[in-house]
Image (cartoon, rainbow, N blue to C red; front, side, top):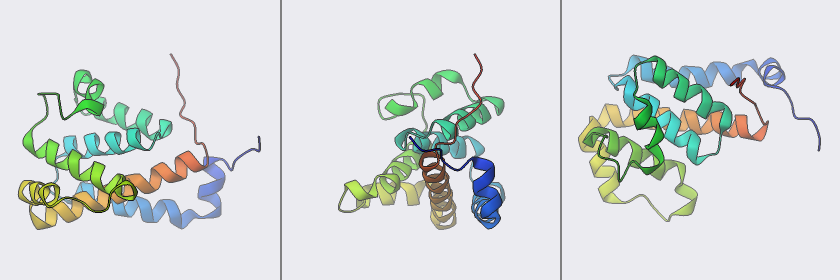
Length: 152
């Protein structure tokens, strides 16, 4: 097995990569999107993409911001869990649809309409940018096998 480039090496070789992806993610800070939704979307997309580094980081950030552990525990089964709001469900459905776009011929009108209704035009664009950003980070982290510092 070959050694992959380290996280530090990737960002040193292409410093604009982190800068531009961070700028894209700043839409979350600049937008009216609820921080809880951003955490849930970042974590759910990272789960789908099997990104250990991002799952670790985003679950910790969510807890630090007051998210309940039980909601993080049942996030993969959000459709069946009664603890998610209508807006959170719309965000998670939109995030899953965009993340899994290669596995489906198109995104359903219902999924789109629910997200548009929940967030409005600007909010949906901001949400989409956040989903694009976390998918990009996941692909970098998984591709280069970035590993979180996990101590038990």
